[in-house]
Length: 474
Image (cartoon, rainbow, N blue to C red):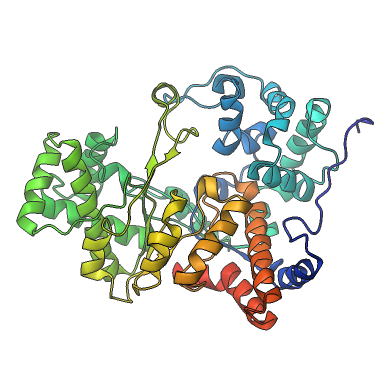
């Protein structure tokens, strides 16, 4: 061990209030939820990890390459993605020694001070790998060797980690074109870990998606439907949704630029679809088509019971040069101002009063929490608020979410926490942060005599465990 390395420790009171009275309450509440199973109802881990149960290759491939939170920060400080071994859009990679990539992370780890990534990674280093010195240039090789060696042992295989993390269920996210062979392999293996899928139809819903023409053709091949007609297109969705449900899916997910919905008469919907299929849709028509499909998805959810998630308000792949070279999900997705009151009205006019439907709405625009989203969710039986997402799932963002939604929406029109991550080992850390912040928030309410402590304890358990299971029909 490096004699000059600085110690790494996780304080037992991290994220709890500095006020002694509130801190003591937060400790007691946290003790009720700290060891509850993890319910991870929405995320982007690779189901192939659990199907193959093969060892992760090394520290870089596990903790750096899949995590755009990490490499986007390095990129923002001038580190090229090629130097980190990030795969390019064509599947190739620069020839980079993974140890050198890890050293680059270590030299620059100070960039993450105070960020959620620092908390998550230090949690992983300390609790998962037992490291007790901080990551920096002087400890880079020690870290790389310790982590990479551990990954070759049975205790660090994906299924063993799943069980060690006390994960009760985890949902991955696949497109309608995915044959779900990894999910089938998991089911056939006899392993008891619950890994389910979620239906994410964006490539065949967004006419402005770069893969839309080829994806639509493949959609027709897989389903055997004539997806050049509106009725055949809708039948194809119903067929794939049923297949996803048969493989464990309980939800759909829709990543649209806006929250716009529409409820066109059938003849107008057919005409619009014909324009889209011809490749002649204007940007306004593409937006209207996405809006109409959201309402059609809600109608299908009433039939098949799948929970509907809407993730709007994101300018995806903002860095055009990076997108062209490296493809999607490389840390260049930027929040947009988003409107919900008018945007959701067509869908809510048709389905919002039906308690059989569950629609979970997320936002990257915090300004809408108290003005739009909490009042909407606090009224419509079908509408619930997803937790703070992406840039706002930091402790401060989680706290603001609770502050701004409590008055109009309460706790029970929210759905607990989901980690929405590709970084498998960060899942326990992310859930621990959410549990600590909720307990700190509840402790403040108890200290202010707005809630009794026994009530706060029930709410803490509900937010951690019961609400996500109920919302996602798990």
